[in-house]
Length: 412
Image: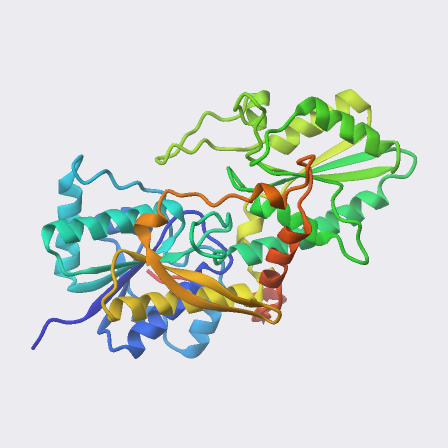
């Protein structure tokens, strides 16, 4: 008997509404390609180090389970935020990872995640080359932040953008109904530490039946508090209700996050990321004190990445596509690479899977181009909207049970 061809897949970082669609096609394609076992690591590389994993054939039993998985938000296998040390700092941790893989007879290691996850793929593939290990390492893109380099966009972004745009329309209608005899300011806080892709998506709410947000502030542009107050005051002279979208990561010119002006949390994760919260709350309190208007802060928080009932069909299909493409690439000899989405056509919208060296992707952030933001720095341009609009199209109807969406749940 020859060596068994086994594959392992993990999920890492902040989840999305479509992350499990990639997982579903990793499993489906691996089985079609003749892999013997498809393991899922529980809680990413951190759980794998504790030898936590499952045989996915004990979880996925039918095509219906695949369809349910495509409609299930959050990380089915569990996620983590674990930074692998540099190889020279702790070679023992790499020896442990490879010894577990050898025990399980793993031929291919696939990691679904964002920038930090691609750092993991880069380090593991480098170690394999240095030490002469034969395993293949492939990255599958995932992040609502849309900040991965070299890919046109990332799975998860389109669905988050769809939810954000729909929620913006609903918040605007709500605010309009409450502005009788008293002016009102609503601040919406959208996820995005350094990249404003999600916040810019609020502009999609500007449609024939909605005026859209009045102002949009991205973290790519330094935030001037005084100019912000002046702009809001000018708008309030013209209309009774204004709605403003801000990224959680907007910073004042000296580099401080706006949320830090109110104190904020000092928590920093393993990758050095400060926890951001309270930007909208701070600005709402500031404007209430300065204008005397009724203000409200709306923080979409985790809803924007977990709203699978509002997922985009384009997004789900592309997430499925890149999962299978990673298995095919590994099966054909690729390693140390990430699958990307290439935009083939805008009208009609078409995309295809490509593949790039993960060293050119890991730890590089893709920001919103300055030319896609207006001169004042408080709204996005038509080019931005044309880029995002195709990604929010279509939907997958959830399977409803007793009036609520059904999900696939991991059985331990």
